[in-house]
Image (cartoon, rainbow, N blue to C red; front, side, top):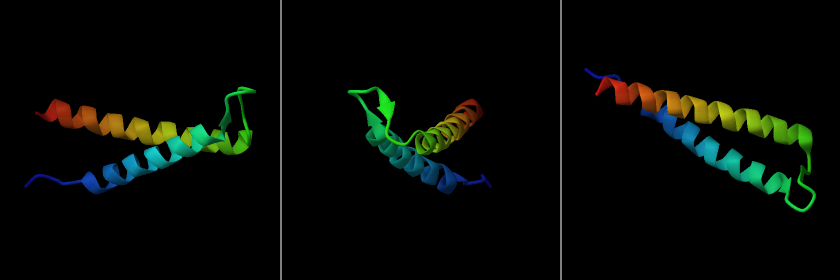
Length: 65
């Protein structure tokens, strides 16, 4: 039987979308700076981690086929 582990990946996709939008809203394009740099750093780390896990899972599923 195949291991179905799609729930965490789906949740990480939702997290990536929400954090990506929040990071976009934090950026001020006129001054090219973030409104709250420390919070933006946390958002960026979370966003990059979730995208990394999503891509890693995609590559794993692709190589199994």
